[in-house]
Amino acid sequence: MGVGHAEMVYHGAINLLPFYLNNKLGDIMSDAKKVLTEKLAEMDKGLFFMGRDRARALSYHETEDLIDELRESVAIMQAQVNTL
Image 1 (cartoon, rainbow, N blue to C red):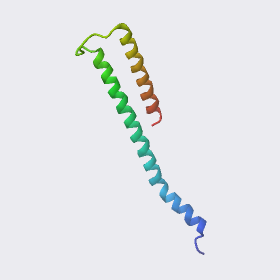
Image 2: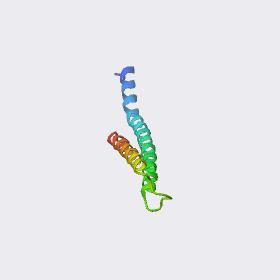
Image 3: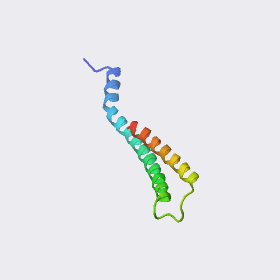
Image 4: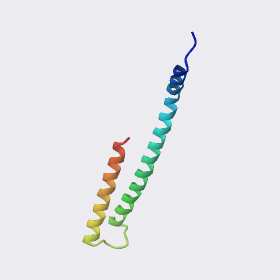
């Protein structure tokens, strides 16, 4: 008895599934890496502005704004990690 067309399509799809999932996972990981890299660069820049090597001290309001931006970056990174 021969294999029907529907069964051939099913087996073909099953065989391609790991390839498809690996590609999708690669896309997701690539996007996550990009977002995390960008946010880490923002955090590094913010920490530099608050560090000893800065050109001038930040005002109270500038410091508060920078802390808010860094907290937002952390929240974005945490959300991105949760998608992995």
